[in-house]
Amino acid sequence: MKKFIRNAILALNYGIVLAVCLIALVSPQFTFLQQAGFGFGAIFLGMGIQRLVRRLMPEDERDKTAAR
Image 1 (tube, rainbow, N blue to C red):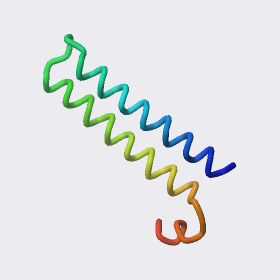
Image 2: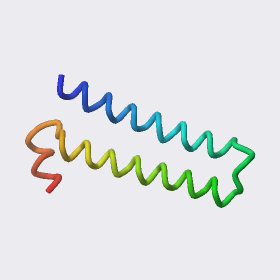
Image 3: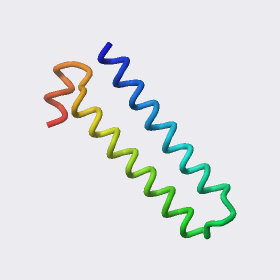
């Protein structure tokens, strides 16, 4: 069950990052630099959430020692 919740959180994270990047890409009201800023910001925030989830919810004991 813990692995399912962990994977669900990561999948939701990936989906949100993808949605933000695509919305910023196709939105005509933003300049190129604003689109790039939103895209990079979403990716970096998504990577941070991914690291946090993997650190707080390791798959097994080996991952917990490797994360430190």
